[in-house]
Length: 97
Image (cartoon, rainbow, N blue to C red):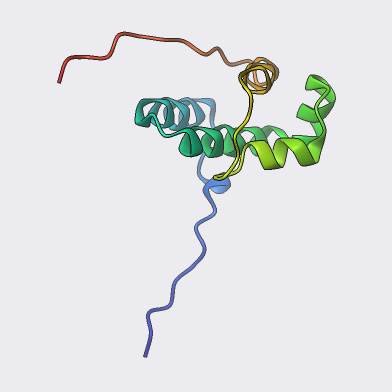
């Protein structure tokens, strides 16, 4: 008898701006490009990919692909999407280990 599992749907858990900011901050801190792209994608889907496509001038399919776990969005794409989401990319000094 196997263990029954459910598919994790992260979009259901990051609905508030605070939760989205926490997700993105954690992803950025990881330094993993795939994780960062996926996190931006989760937030983008919460706001509606079709609306973001209109706001950014990027196509919907390209946004889905760019912000998947295997996506590799350009910096200009990331900045356009963050601007449309009313988010700002910031940099801070990493604490010494």
